Image 1 (cartoon, rainbow, N blue to C red):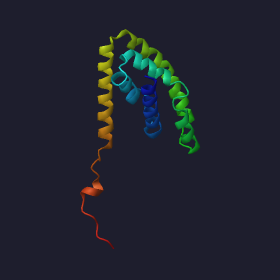
Image 2 (cartoon, rainbow, N blue to C red):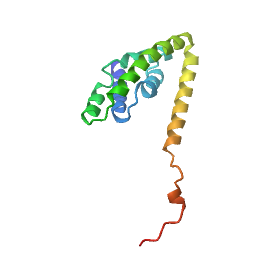
Image 3 (cartoon, rainbow, N blue to C red):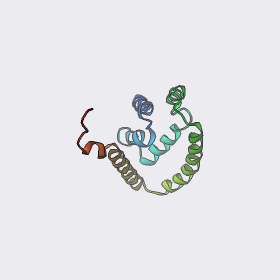
Image 4 (cartoon, rainbow, N blue to C red):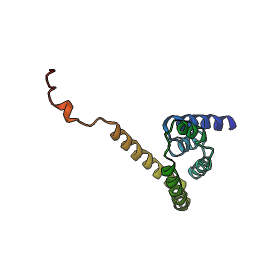
Length: 134
């Protein structure tokens, strides 16, 4: 199992650095379906990983390029601290099956939103005839 967890960690680390996603989108499904952990254990493990070391390597690279808004990050971190506390109180009370189903619905909704956002919108400049070159 340590080798499996190492491989999962490496895959999630690469995706954190590449796309900024990790715990919710990649790690939890891998822990549930590849490592066969219960949903509550997978979510708790994901929360453990979100302690400071999670994205430190990726954060440093973005910081060096000047692509970090520290104020927005600090404010969001406070919201995550409070929201995480209250959200976990709700999740702990659910059965593992119900929690897994809600998590799946969340992933579907996120995928649909991302897919719709990536679809090109009709642009008035592409729907009209091009002007003649002068």
